[in-house]
Length: 86
Image (tube, rainbow, N blue to C red; front, side):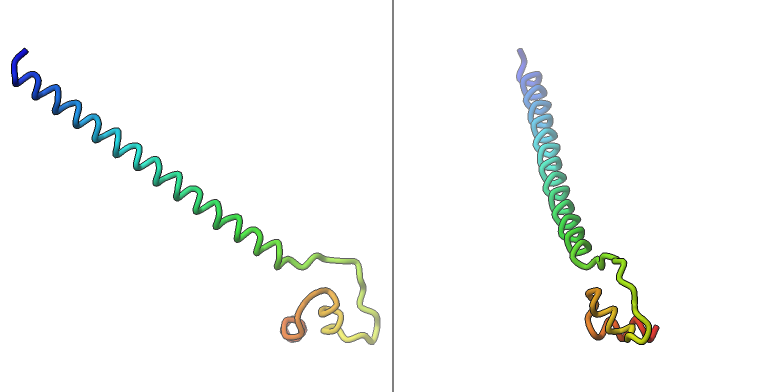
């Protein structure tokens, strides 16, 4: 075998190894980003679950303040006032 052939084979092997290392690093980074996005989505879903006001069949009786009824359903005083003035 000539020195040129050995040098060419080594060059191809090094290039292939570099390409495999790059592909592996890219895959690791992609999985890390996937997991980060998944955690963000789960955190957002939990936030949405915590902020949902579940409807109920409670009726507002005649003469009862609508803002007070909204507070009984879970709204804060300010949110109830904003909802009644909208």
